[in-house]
Length: 413
Image (tube, helix red, strand yellow):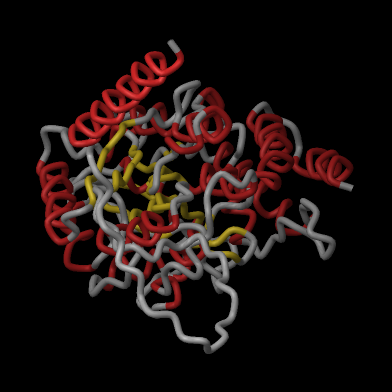
């Protein structure tokens, strides 16, 4: 009986082994591994690194975020140029696929808010390259939402920049953006007019408007700085000085008395309202951003109150890096440089009203751009803007200059 049981068990084991052999033939077999000959010479221990030693063979998505005004799929000549430029970059980098997303300039779905939310909720979905306005660039840099371009690009050290443009890309002396489009406060007027000083403007009896209701009071602050006024003290805190402030508010009062300035402009909070008054013929001169001018207008530097130091405020748009993938980050910096190249950016922005960030052969433009400086930092504007707005409102309502100046100085002590 035992012998019979052993025979049956042996047969079953034999059948099982034959079945396993047949099954092994159906499964994928591992590739043979060649083992190199190892010498007895001692080698240092390998050092861990984040950089792959294998060549990159997969396609990388390079995400680009833009506001609607720079949408490459819009039905404009400049959009077509940008779309072609992006396609050309892809052709040179066959393993890079550019993905463009359009984000609003303001509101809950703005570029800045989207960066902030995405950095927390889905950091891997952050854009590798994003176009940011100067105020948003400053906020994004201080919040750590974007990376410095220093170390990835040396183009900011190129001498072929207007001084204001180099300032646009710097936050606290660190390069965070590559500027590609500039804008600045200028004097816009009809072609038959010409002004060199504020005395000429006031004696001309031409109506002048600017957004006096702007809570940041940029036009008024620009006049104040043109009178050699300082915006920060030695401790770096927001400040205003008596003499240039008096000079600035006196100019406004004189303009009212000569009926050059419209008291109603205190209701103009944006350029849109001021430019509308200019286009409707209610005014023939306006202080506004250059991008609001038309081809029929003449733009010139706003006369300074101190004739030896012309000054105006500038802002603009820059390319910034937000993604953290080291491989794509370097390519994103390369794309940014490709998009600000002199042989492209001028044609791309032609007709947009934007001013160049790179040196131009146009002497008329140079005289304006060389007097421009980046708008004050957000924290300075948040303090001084409302104070200057209140001062301007009081002057337009008939208060005396000295009384307003004393009140302002008390607020900034």
